Structure formats: structure tokens, C-alpha cells
Length: 116
Image (cartoon, rainbow, N blue to C red; front, side, top):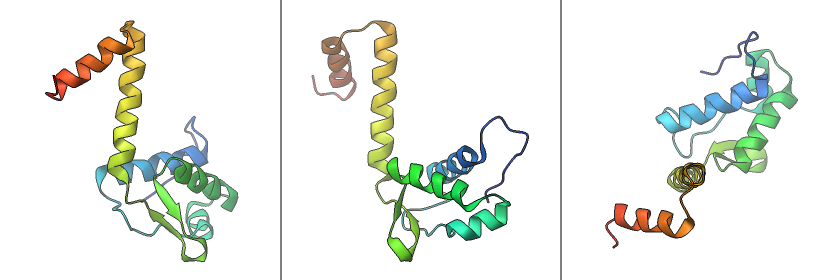
């Protein structure tokens, strides 16, 4: 269930996006699950359809959902790949913050995977 908190600092489109992403991550929404139509979800939440449409567009750009024209919007089946890319990006950010060079960072990953 998606809800909008009018007192939250995040705009409604971001709240919708975060809640759908969280439901996908938790397994509450599975690959292939169909999301409500933009108009239906907007009406249920009492927000503008363009707000929901923006959330869906951003989720699609992030690979969380796929839009299939008139068939609707579905949870993407490629969640493992997306999660791996996010983990890699977080690792790179942390390594850079620590001042570790790229060669050493790769060596750490190889050792962690048992490849060296």
C-alpha cells in the first residue's frame, strides 16, 4: 500500500517512488507484478496523475519497472542486476571517500571474492 504524507519534506512523486522501490526490495512486489494505472493510483492517493507519471518514469529509468504501453507498468525482472549495480556504486563512493586507489580497490574485491 502506498500513502502520501503531506507533512513530509519529500515531494509526493518521491514518496511514491521510494515506497515502490522499498516494496520491490522487500519482495512485497515481485518481478512481473502489475502496478496500478497512473490515473488509478493518482485518484487513490488524491494527487495529480502527472505526479504518479513522474514517479513511474523515474522508476523505469532506474530499471525498477517496465512500461509496456497500453498493457501497463510492471515490476522489472532484473532486480539482481540493479541491486548489484547499486552495491558497486556504493562501494566506489566509499572507496573514494577513504582515498583508496582503483588498483587496490580491485585487489580488495578480488580477495573478497576469493579470486586471488
